[in-house]
Image 1: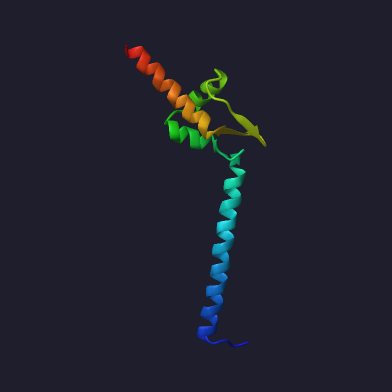
Image 2: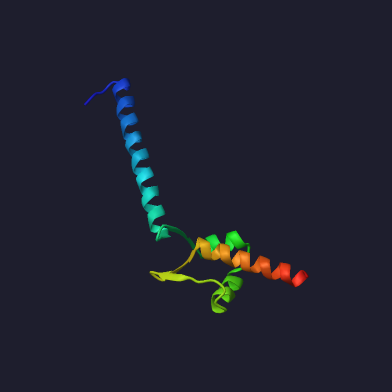
Length: 99
């Protein structure tokens, strides 16, 4: 089977376009999996990076019920709004402590 270069390039272009479409659909599905009730879920690593804390500190926040979490298939997740609330609470405590 012989095909010329132009036909080959055309076929490869169509294949790459389909890969791009599939990639977008996978990203959409991944975003759906990482959300609950339309709210973004973060895993441990996301929260550690966002708050710039150690894994032990995050464990302490969970144990002290400072941050709600959800276990899905053995993995811990946190609602983004709960993380934001923790930040607001921590900030307001530090402002009150300075008065």
